[in-house]
Length: 160
Image (cartoon, rainbow, N blue to C red; front, top):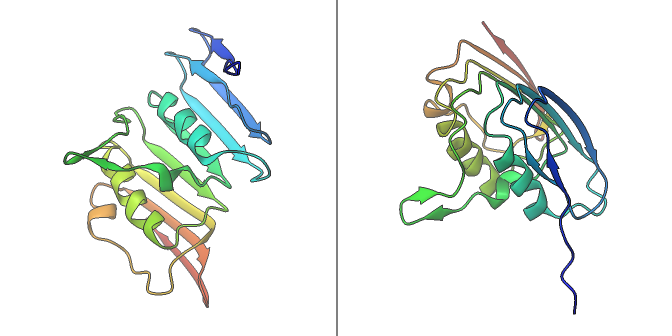
């Protein structure tokens, strides 16, 4: 059986990326100059592992918008550390229409720990766990948080 080759986008000067995912077989990106990325997943046929691989390729961005993204559930601990790269340049993260319930909420905290320079976190139209409360660890270095999400009841919060 022939293995399907994953397309490779090698764009060393690319600074901005807008991507809508509707299918499996996400491309591999080598984009060392990428400053901002916006990725929307339609959840049709997109494999969560493919989403996760794409997320790992975006480690160099300063601004990241993820919409409908479920890849955080793929972050796993391996021998005391997770297999996610450090997002040293990331200062702004927007999560839109993401399901952050269950174990995914814990994975979000691990992801945020790998973004040491994150200043602004926006959760928009995300699904939160019923017993959700702000994690002190998750918000230590943030200068701005905007949370407009829902659980069983409505929750709206803006902190400056």
